Length: 413
Ligand SMILES: [Zn+2]
Ligand SMILES: [Zn+2]
Image 1 (cartoon, rainbow, N blue to C red):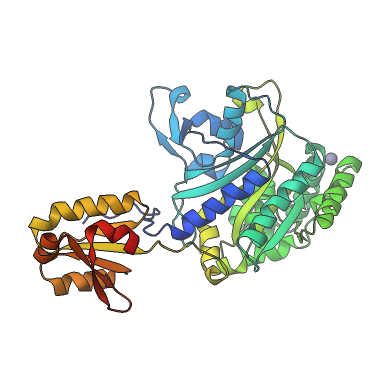
Image 2: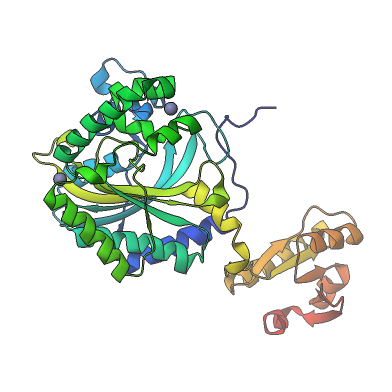
């Protein structure tokens, strides 16, 4: 047997998947987002520039195809934002801001575990080319209202932090480094490496001892300049006006280099260790894709798999669409096949959900099969029915059967 690739999944029932997808399409349309799609294949250098070569994603997790030169190397996209900003610039989209929604598979060579796959779907939202704090508030409100009003989710929390500007982060980094030098003996080896390479990432450490040490670490929000401070206050006030509940989490820094100012995560304890199902924030990209200037943007990604795990636990509170009633045509012999196909064709043309049972041998086994697939009614056509121009219609719930003229079958159903 050939198995599926580790870290990938076969989705055999798409009912919930399509339900959530339809809801988000409807929801983003209400907020004036344009649905776009960018390629799964991108040049590797795009992510080198945008995400930074020291991030785990770029240094260890990319699926890259060999090429003659580094310039020509292409890869399976590990995330969508870089490609969307490339598309915004390359297609000379002038709309300002440009609000986009997109979804599709991303690829990362990670160690597979619960809620973490090597091929996974992301839903992406970007508001491109706006520096307005009010847009940030509106954007977060859109996400929050999707989870709470459209999916009726209750058990989740919105965490906020403010990363300030580069000046603020520089000062904070210095203070953080001083603090870490003093507690160096207590932190793990990974954190020791991160302290020098990408210091904010220490907060992502899963080690409890490290986390305990970081509780007293200098907070970024204590180093904000006047302008950033008032923006941070402003966005919290706006969220309160919009009735969005949140908590402040000074350890929330997000893994990627391109974030600044507001960062946020939606997390739920129902998801266990990988509790975050949506994350995003303000970022600045553009020069990396060849633009003269960076575009100020706010964006977010939903881990679709994790959101589905969460929604599944809440499935009784949702109005999932029901399957249409199935009408099953049963020809008793090959001689009635043509008549059955013509009847099926007529019924589907009139919007009935129809199937023809062609693989049975005895009426008993075919009725058993009809029961198993949950048919509402079966339409039996045997020798007798063929001769008299009739169909025997059997109601699978009541067991009642009636003979109906073929010409009147539509009226009868
Ligand atoms: Zn600042
Ligand atoms: Zn650590």
